[in-house]
Image (cartoon, rainbow, N blue to C red):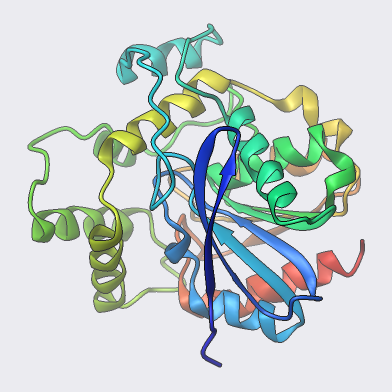
Length: 301
């Protein structure tokens, strides 16, 4: 089933956010929150098509500083190595914005669309955003699915060293489209799912499409800084009342399985699905399982 996306832009918290919708207008609204540096097009068609087929009104959007949404630079100086260390020590860091602001963006977009309550699904950083939104705005979230995410607590296991090293951007910065594709696909192979391999050509095409749509490395830096500056939000999680599904890969080298397990342990009644062979990516072959878990959790609402 080929989806027909309706594109739009909304002013949310003083920023223009780009979004797309598909599915029946009267369907159950389901909002997708993307991860660090990701764009709305990074949500796999294989997932979106299955969710629409199950009757959901699927809404995907670009976070601030990503895709076609507005820049959110307030002039705060950023020193990622220093502030990463501060975050591990639990020390405060001033930033352009925090994950709480991104959670406000998600709820604000629902306001602009006239949606009082929605099912909320987030991956990685988007999972953190979704957890914060569900905790702070429980009346707005019908169900919550947090995928390959975390509570952002500094005592949780860090990423595998080679992944951290790559994320730190050591070495020459890619400047051309081909260099960006080569570097990004290499990173995706490093964090990808060994049990659900993704064809290299699929990855290259998606990275190239994202580059052509919006290449915003400074936005990625600001989003990274927002994660570091937010710190742990574990104290909020007992406030979540929505039915919750946590999905995490047992082979995730970036956000270790303990990160998802921690979220599930702190959210009342949360279900935890640990998937062998799943890493930190969104392989098309795994999307039927994700869609099944999301729909089953939404049915609990």
